[in-house]
Image (tube, chains in turn green, orange):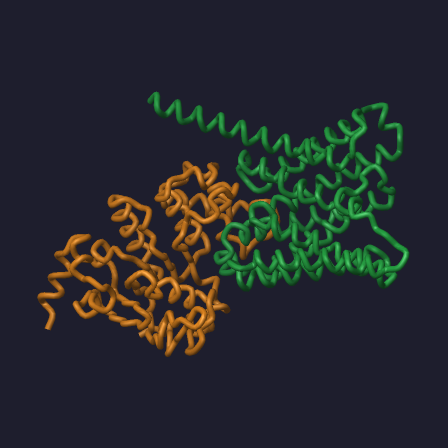
Length: 277
Length: 253
C-alpha cells in the first residue's frame, strides 16, 4: 500500500475516500437515525436526471445534477413532512422518474453517450485535485453546521414535537439538512459513485449506532469505520486489480455482516447467562 | 379571579374529514389540576396538541395566557404519551433532559447552569443515577420519569402529561401523583389519564372528552360523564377502586 502512494492518483483516491468518509459519517448518522436511507437513495437517483439535462441543454454537469438533486430533496422533504406515512411511495416515484428522464435525455442528445456505470460506481482512481478541494470545503461546512445545530438536530431527530415546543425551527432545519444531503450526494457521486455514497451513508452509521451512547460518539465511530472501509477497499482493489468502488462497498458490507454476527453471538450469550441465573 | 391560563372557544378539529374535536369551549384557571378523561380515540391527545399549538384548529379560537399557543410555547412543559419513541436512538438520559434547555443555548458544549438544572430535576424524579446511561436501557417507568424531568427543565407554567402512568406500576403511580400535587402549588397541571381513582383526590377540574368536551370545574365524576366518556361504566368501575366514584354518584342530586 505504501509504495502505491507514490502515484498521485492513488493519493488523490485516498484523500477522496477519507473526505467522503468524514461527510458521510456525519450526514449518514442523521440519515440513519431519522430513517431516511430510502429518501437519500431517492435524491441520489433522481440526480441522474440532472446528468441527462446537463448534456441535453449543454450546461455544465454540476449545475444539472445540483439542480435536480436539490429540487428532488426539497420536494421529497416537503412530502415527508406533510404526509409522513405515504412519503415512501412518492419518493419511489420521483426516484424512477428522475432516472428515466436522465436516460431519455441522454438518448435524445446526439452523438454523445454517457457511461451509466461511472455514475453508479464513480471513478475514485481518476479524481482530479480540484474535486478534492471541493470535498474538503464541503466537509468543513458540514462539520461547522452540525456543531452549531448539534442539539437542535438531536432534538428534531429524537422528538420533533418537543423540539417544536422548544422553539426549534423544525421545518427550516429539516430543509437545511436535506439540502446538505443533496449537495453532499452530488459532490461525492462525482468521485465515488452513487452506490458507494449510499453504502457509506448507511453502513458505518448503522454499525456505530449500536455501540454509541450519544449521537456525537456515533458520528465519530461512523467516520472512523468509513475511513477504515475506504482504505481497506482501496488496498484490496490495488492488490488484486479490482474495481475500487465495488471493492470498498464489499469491504463495508463485510463489516456490516460481521457486526450482525457479533450481535447475534452477544445476544445468545446474554440469554444463556440469564437462563443460568 | 386571575385571567384564565387556557381558553378555548368553539374549537373544532378533524383528521382527513373525520371530526375528532367538536365545538369545544372551556377555560382553565391558574393552578388548576385538570384531568382529561375519555375513551380511546375520543380526542384527548388531539385536544392536548391543539392547546400546545402543535395542531391548528379548523375552527374556533385558542388562547394560552391570552396569546395564541405558538407564541407562548415556552410556557409548556410537555410529556408526550409515547415515551418509547425512537427506541434504538443513541442518546443518553442527560441529553434527553437537556432538550428542555434548547431555547437557551446552541452548540455542542453544555452550560453549567443547564447541566445543574437537568441534574436537579433528574434527582427530584429519582433517576439521577442513570444520567449517563442510554435511554433505551431504562425501563418504561424510568423513562417516563426522565421525560417528566425534561418537561420540568423547561421551567414551565403549565405542565401537560399525556397518559403519564401507562408504564408505571401502582406504587410508582401514587408517588408520581404526590409529586404532581406538590408541583401544582406553583404550576397549572393537565393530565390525560384513565386512572380516575388515584387522581381524584388531587384534581380540581375534570374534562370529559368524546369529540365534545364536558368541563366540570369541580372534583367530581358524575354518572353522566361516565356514560358519555365510556361505553360501559360498570367495566371502568370494576378496574379500579370504585368507592370514590360510587360515592359521588350516590350523593348526586
